Each structure stands twice: as structure tokens, then as C-alpha cells.
Length: 191
Ligand code: IMP
Ligand code: MG
Image 1 (tube, rainbow, N blue to C red):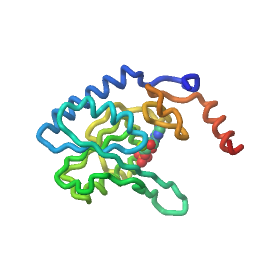
Image 2 (cartoon, rainbow, N blue to C red):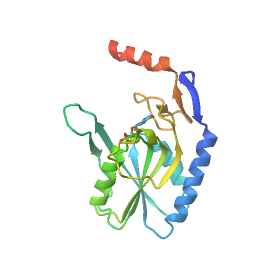
Image 3 (cartoon, rainbow, N blue to C red):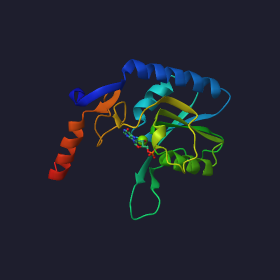
Image 4 (tube, rainbow, N blue to C red):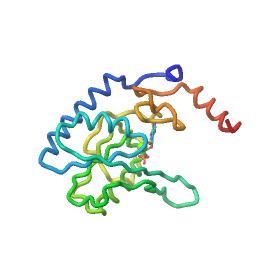
């Protein structure tokens, strides 16, 4: 797997430092609140596991799955919740959505709206990575916490995937161009 990586953007040490900084800030900001961490599957699961252990105040956790459809036949990109929270009543909770990467922002715009509609006391966002160049101009949400900003390149590792692979890399980096080409070839051949 490692031989497919072109360049490492964030080493394990870099990620640990980012997580420690965010965890300390969140612990301070939410000490008098009722914190519920909501992680977006699957990409944010590694970040969630580390972040929750760097938070020193009591909190609960939950998970949801969202999928986006970029279908040319519908006028707007639709985001669907395919696995909902197990906590049914979120009233009284201060929700912090834990996300791997904020790209166009459409997924989190929609999720924020849904969770606010369910009656959460507050809904904020903690994203490990942010790609501000890619933001949809119609998206108005702003993350409360950002681990780091990245330029407009496709990154993998630490939960982030390419075609469902590379999530288990302990660091974040970019793939060699030939990996994408081989993969495209395999998809064409039905491998
Ligand atoms: P968006 O902000 O609604 O466009 O969607 C963000 C989602 O797209 C993230 O949660 C990731 O699952 C995926 N994504 C966006 N950029 C990348 C990337 O560079 N690598 C891996 N997944 C990405
Ligand atoms: Mg994601």
C-alpha cells in the first residue's frame, strides 16, 4: 500500500498534534455543555476514535452515514442519510459533527440542517481537513474547528479512501498518478 503513495502530507506525529490541539480546545469550550459527538461514517471513524480520547470532559458519541448523489438528471446534488443516529431525541444536546474532510460542504450543510431540525441545542462542526478552494458558493456553514487546510488535491489515509481503499494508512498523503490510471483500467475490465 505504502508504495502507492506519492507524498505524505500529514505524518502520524502531525495528526497526533492536530488531534491533541482540537481535543484540548473542545474540552475547554464544551465544559459546561452537553456534548454529543456525531461522526460521519466511514471516513471520519479514525479521526473520531482519536479525537474522543483527547477530549477530557464527559461526552456521548453516535454515528450516521450520508451519501451524496451527483446525478445530472436532478437539478441539485442531493445528500441522503442512509444510516441515522441511534439516539432518537437529540433535544438538549450540543452536537459536534466530526468529519474527515470538508470539500464542497454540501454534505455537512445538509446534516447541520437535519440535526438542527431534530431540535439539538446547538450544532457545530469539527473537520480534520478543509479544502476551502472547493467550497460550493451556496454553502453557508462554517466549521468551528479545523485541523488543517489542504490544497485542492485528493488525499487518502487516516480514514480517507480512494475507491474504499487506503483508509487504514496511519498517515495522510496523495497517491501516485499511475494508481488512479490502473484503477480506472481495472474498473473498465470489471476487476
Ligand atoms: P462534500 O463536502 O459534501 O463535498 O463531501 C465531503 C466528502 O467527500 C468527505 O466526507 C469525503 O468522504 C469525500 N472527500 C472529499 N474530498 C476527499 C479527498 O480528498 N479524499 C477522500 N475523500 C474525499
Ligand atoms: Mg466523509
